[in-house]
Length: 114
Image (tube, rainbow, N blue to C red; front, side, top):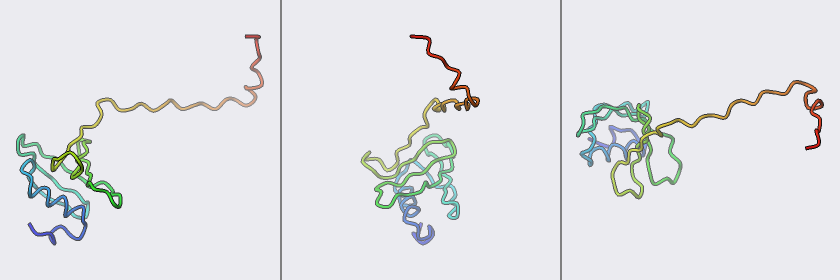
């Protein structure tokens, strides 16, 4: 694998290097335009597609999201080449929409001396 095969995107080059030096995942395919890779987890044979998230300037990590909703972090303080975070078990529920009060309804509320 040569860096020029990964374009001039530092995040993609970091990803390529991490895949090369870590035996947890094997590169199956790459799509430089989409900034995604297809990988196989060597222990389970599970195939997933990882897509780069937008990188914040000065960040010490590269983050990707896979087609199963997991976040993959390269770098950081974990001491591991890759850290995979599963999506939360239950999605957070949005607050119900507040219905507009009918015109004049606020004027009809009376104080009952509570």
